[in-house]
Image (cartoon, rainbow, N blue to C red; front, top):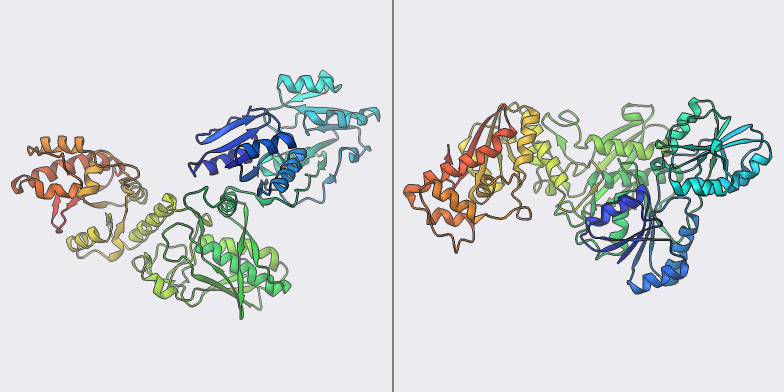
Length: 584
């Protein structure tokens, strides 16, 4: 069981991550006022001291603590750390993302360090800080306190001696609606609106004083985003998520590049390196080193990926002068394919390293290579040429090896997003092939039959939709295909006819009642009591009624599909088990 301390944006994100597991957990806030959607989480409210937290953890068999509370909840951070140590339970700190400290701001460790050479100050540090700032008023400094417009906050502020004139209220934390010489901020991170407040204060010419965030106890496993949180939970409490996430080949290449650069520039060979993901969070990735290269082993988690376990290598070669890609040239070594068709981020002949991974690599190694000569980054995958035959790459026109891809940097198991992105890329290649018609089909068997039906179309014009019929048709509409053919076998067709545009068995099952209504409509009612699979209908329906039934099924399918491609000539093909094709 997991106990989460939330009440913040990070707390809400923690709940979103844990909800995906479908397992019970506890979500605790001090006041219970946060609006957070929980389906599997059990809400708790009220502060827990050391004794109460230990008792709760023992009573409810808590095996993992997640501290996603405010950065300045120092007492809670220390209590969680103490309890974790006492009970020998791992603890995760979901930290905010903090911008690099600006040396032009005044940084302080405590309220007593607020400079006194100012005439007026706006304090945005919360109602609890008023008593700590009162000594400034005794020194002749006019102090305004900006607090939330809550009755409890107003009452507490006045109990500490604040007057009505001194109190300011806000809904937008970045708005500064009083003219003062200086402003006092907490180092609250990006999600706390820190940078927005700094930008507004700078524009007003105010002196900016910042209270540094407290140090995080060393016992914590620190993460600063949802991907890192999930990976930490998977590592520390492996049974919580039924399926585990993995890394894209782009992230593996980035990790290997960072490791190789670290060795080249600093002479260091760390076992793990920090990787900045496209969403701004940082995760730690394991790496290794060889003769002249660094490497990262691809872990796909529980996603069915033929590249799982491959070794992604990066070697670096200094260049004599700055070049494109911000001082970086990318080369594909052994096992990395090349683009042979248009429709990708880069033209034919370029190594199959997509734009996302290139940007990730540049963003991650640029701080290490600053003021250094430019580099050629060569990515290699031993055995990649053989592995590529088991991927979409040959059909996409990627020759000689695998491609280095990845949008988010993380692969969620059986990710719909990842599969749909691969469909989109196939559709873009089909469009770039120059074919006016794209033929979408469910898999290898149906594709074999529709290829024979359209023998003159290029191979890139045939795209597998798996179960995502609706999403594939939407992509076809976005790309402006003039003609689309949908090939479907009976098992998926009866689901599609009932309006299910995602035919995965987890989303929908065969509806015998609806099938019976279509049989009635076709004038061939039969007993469906013992029907297990839709394809059994081919044998049960009399031969002279097969075409009537196919027509009804296709008509219902067309009603749901045509609206998704309103400006496209749509052809539907219903494919028999022996390859016979029925159409309207």
